[in-house]
Image (tube, rainbow, N blue to C red; front, side):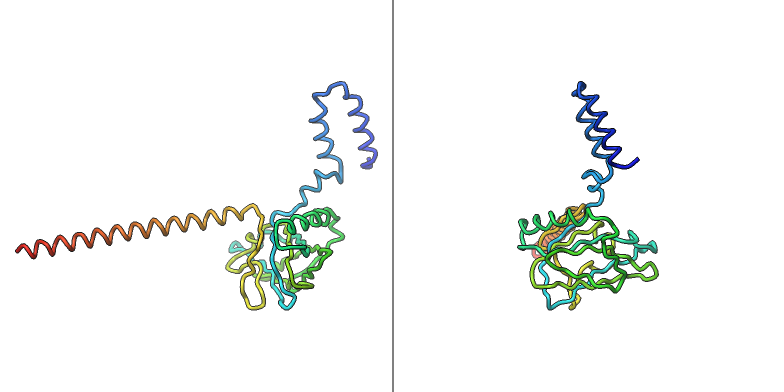
Length: 230
């Protein structure tokens, strides 16, 4: 059956169930989740990671993905949307998100497939790519070319950290890591937790070393005191 016929049948079904008001919310949820092309279906196609970075048109940036130690990439390919943001703040990022939602909702046939060595062009209207990772190589590289100076929002189907094995996922032509002004992702908070854990470990180590040094100094003073008495 076509989707229009399916919607018509389900609409009739809901009409027949109108007398059972308690059933309608649950039935409506089932309706949205199962109708092809509904918003609920599109949600599965959204990004897992997003970031906002200030880029320069004078620079060529490199987006990289590295094969895992197990021998393969975390995923064979990844969707990536790049949109110029109006400002380098939450407002600019949120406005870019609206455009990203529309781009992610487009059929796969309308996305540009890009193999390792290809160019990612960043502009105001937004560009959508499917990055195909080179399974025969330990690393896949893509050149990111901003159309102008300013903030750009990036939305990735998978977290870039999944593809990091000694290499930061985005670097400039000098080899320096590009730090995101704003970053949202499932593992981003976890990274900060790890950093805080390491900081706490160092603090405890410093305190322990200080206590040992104080004890040694105290013992040394005690020994000199006994020598003086003799």
